Length: 362
Image 1 (cartoon, rainbow, N blue to C red):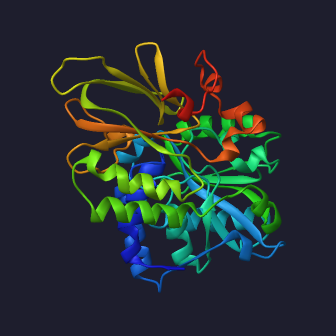
Image 2: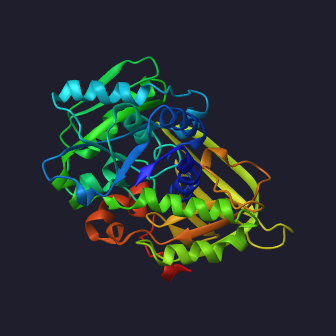
């Protein structure tokens, strides 16, 4: 599949939907990707299965608190600069790029570098959604080291990483991110094509385009979009889509804590009569609950849609007074394995309860 400028609207919309509130705001990355693709003849989106086993692949994307990206704007040259610095650091040329998460902004960062370097981008990612920490990617869960890795900041300063574990790498890159202004571009998880095939969540970029097309073509009241969206998810590797709540944002608080956007949103019925919904946030929407009753939790997906248009809303764009519909989606089966739940279950985020699949909760 050849990606062109015309695919970016749908890819951005669908990426925000799957990113569950995280992944970075897509607007500036969209403008940069639009410019990069317009200056090239497009980018090849390829299946991981077509890649040679000995190919050299790396992930690329933004790391930091998504709210910072609304003020510390990226440059169109940052992804390619990071890629070239990484290649010089490891002494080897990269053959293909892959997103480490599917997200509004992070779905587009690999395209910017690919359009300027001529490299293909893998149709897939390392999460099937967005998650806040490096050890939560499918790649380290499968035993692939995130390092050697390299990150650059908005001034072009570079930092190199060589860590013994994904957890250690997460601590180090998070500390460096804060020291470098709160948002950086990282190239990490160098791997062979064979290793990629064992871990990548396949088809998520093309599926983002499919979801984005539904949102664009059927733009309107969010509840009216759900049947078409549900039908698309039924044919995918994800679980069923469920409407969790419709109401208005009556309280929202967020702060940058330890390099993450940490906050909480409270929703109430439009008429004010009924139980309120609370959403816990750490870059992404992690838990949706009414009182003590949990409706959905990480690693299942929680997405907030604008009620009037059906447009998905990033967590850093959530505001008091917005009228929204909240939906939940079952995560890919990979994240329901015992090995994955060791790093992505609710207790890994400090919540005092075990993971229960959304279809059993709702």
